[in-house]
Length: 176
Length: 428
Ligand SMILES: Cc1ncc(COP(=O)(O)O)c(C=O)c1O
Image (tube, rainbow over the protein chains, first blue to last red):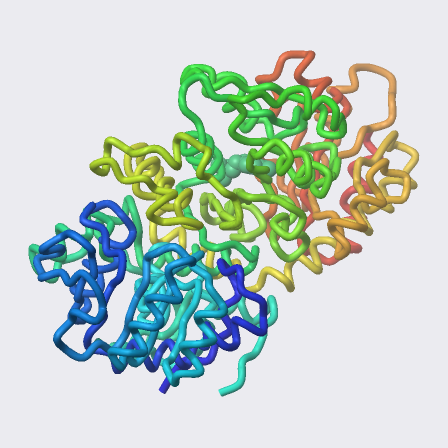
C-alpha cells in the first residue's frame, strides 16, 4: 500500500503536470516492483550526482545498467553504448542527459519495451514525456530517483529533508 | 487515495515522524547514541562518501534530531533544515558555510546583542567583513552590497525595539544582487510569519526561545528554502578538498547548502545538538500555535496597559497603532508581532538606571533573567545585560536607551501580569 502525499517542493512542473508526471502512487509502485534500472548518462566520475545515484540504487538491491557512449565499465558493471544494445529486460530508464536528448531516448525506451522513463531533476521535456505516456510507459519528470526512493523508504528524512510525507501509520519497508 | 493539504497544526504534530516499522513508538524516540553500527564495510564507505542516506555519528546527524529538522522545514515551507547546538551556532554555521576569508555579510544594526558581537568581532577574526546598516535604509543595503557579499542578515522582529523588517523589499534587493536573504525569525516562529514566503532564502531560529517554549533547552535551526541558485557561490559550488573534489551544488542541487552545512561546517566545527534537547524542543513545537496565540494576546494587552501608564514614556510594540511599523506588522505578522518588546520608563528624579533596577526587583511574577520565549513571563534591562558589550554608538544604532526594560510576555493569567507590572511601577 502506498503513502498518500502531495509533493510540491523542488520542481518546475505545474500542478497539472505534477499530477501526470510525479504521481506518488506511480512512483512508489515503480520503485517497489522494478528490478532493473538502465541509467543513461551515468558518469564515470565518483562525485557526480549520476554516479552517486547509481551506486545508491545498487546498494538498495536494484540491478543498474549504465548506458555510456565510451566507458566499458562503471560501478563495477558492464556499460552499453545505447539502450537498444542492452540484452535484457529493463524496467526503468533513468535519464541524466539534457532535455534536448530526451526524445531520442524515449524512442529507444519504447522500442526496448521498458516499463518506465524517468528524467532526473531539472531535465524536463514535456513533449517527449507525453509521447512516452501515450506509448503506455509510466513517466516521471523532474524528480531524483534516489531521493524518491529515500522519501518513501524514510531514509531521505534522516538528512533533515522536508519529505512532505505525513502519516500516522507505521512505515512499511519499500522493496527493491 | 486522494491527495490532501495538511494544515499547520497537523504538521506541528506529525511532520518528520512516521512511526517506525519495528516498534511503532508514537512519541518521538530519543536516540541517545553517539554512533550507529554499519551494516557492512561497503555501507560504511558509502556513508562516508555521502552516497548512502544514513547516520554515522551524532555530531553529523541523529534520528531524534532529524524529526525536529524535518518538522521545522515543513512548518517554514523549506526544503530541509539542520538543527544545531544553539541559535548562535545556527548563525555561525550559516555564515561559515556561505563565506570564505575576504567575503562579506551585510547585516541589520538592530540585532540580538550576541549576533552583533558575533558579526562585529568573531567574524572579523575569520576575515569576514560585516557592514551594518539601518534595516529601513534600503539604499544603505544596496550601497553596502559588493561582489564579495554572500548574504544579507536581518531579524524579522528586531531585538529589542520591536522594529519589523520589510522582508518583501529586502528579499527583492537580495534577489536583484543575487545574494541570499538570511532571516532570524526567532521572535516570530513559523506560526506568526514564514519568511520564505516573502523572499528569504535561509531562516534561522534560536529554538531555545518560543519553539522549545519552556525554557528547558538551548538549540538552533537553519532552514533553507531550496530556491536559491548557488551555482555562482564559490563555497557551495566549487570542488571541495574535504570530499575528493565534490561540488555540493552540482551534486545535491537544492540541497547543496544544507549538505555543505551538515557534512562540512558542522562536522568540522562540532556544534551539534544533543538528542535529548531535540526531543524537548519537539515537545514544545507540538503546541506552538496554541502557545503563540496566547503569547501574542497577552503581549498586546500588556503593551496597551503600559502605553496608558503614567510611569511609562514609550512602548516599542508593533501591535500598537503608535509604533512606526504597525502597518508592516499587520502585513507580515497578521496574527500578532510576537511577545517580546521593550518600553522606556518615564523620566524621574535620580538615575534612570536605578529606576529600572528598582522596577525589576519589585516584580513578583516576571522572572529576571537573560532569555525570552519561555511560557513564563520574563524581564531584563538590556543596557546592563544582553547589550552591555556594545559601545555607545552601537547602542544608539541598535535603538537601545538606558531607561529601556525588555519583557517577554508569558502565558500567565493576564490580570496577574498587569497587576504585577502595576505594583512594580508604583515604586518608580
Ligand atoms: C533573536 C535571537 N537570535 C539568536 C539568539 C541566539 O540564540 P541561542 O541563545 O540559542 O544561541 C537569540 C537569543 O539568545 C535571539 O534572541
